[in-house]
Image 1 (cartoon, rainbow, N blue to C red):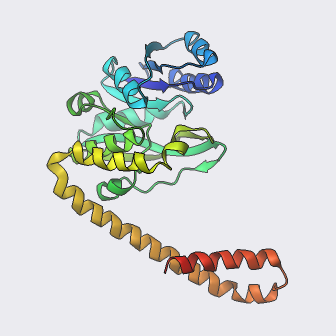
Image 2: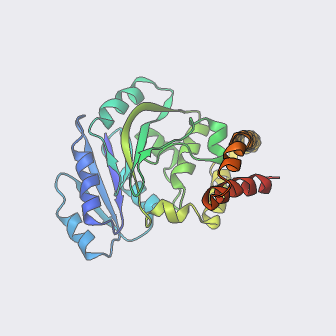
Length: 283
């Protein structure tokens, strides 16, 4: 099986940590491919040259989707695992996921639960990857295992996307009839940093619009089903919003005596007022 790491100007220490986590897997054999997507930072380029135990590929800067596709097209493994150059696998990641994917032909994607590290810590809380919910929101980590045969058949990541390329790819695999499974073990560490690619992409309205267009463009046989699932996911989102409002009302009711008792506390009053303003904006 093959791990493909796309790199663009990644700080050397983070790059070495990601690569070390890939080459140190307890499962074997493992091929590790690092694709340099046209890095211009001399420290990154030097660190790439010094990597050991990997197959290094260099290309002009064309984006992470292109870098992943390039590396995966050169991979020798029958299973593929993308890994961002600043994230980390626990040593037993492949030992846990590979047998599960190989043991169930109906599965298209296998991943594990994850933890944040860097500027945020704690477990990554994602809903189960059901197909209707995936139309509205990605609930599968970008680092998840899938089959090389599906990559070849469905064409891999959409290189026209400037972000959310993993969301579109997972959705394409699910619409093709595959299933996704998330193992309970926390074997993937997802780095949070202010300058991370996801932090900048997630706030881009243009990137979201391009994602929706790509989902429809790449799945023409599923247009009606996509529309139905979009409405279903909207219903789920509205239900969650109403549930949150009920919790706010419950909290406000029980905090009433506290507010009266600590009426002289400006800080507490300000906090309660913020909750009330949030509730009023929902109506």
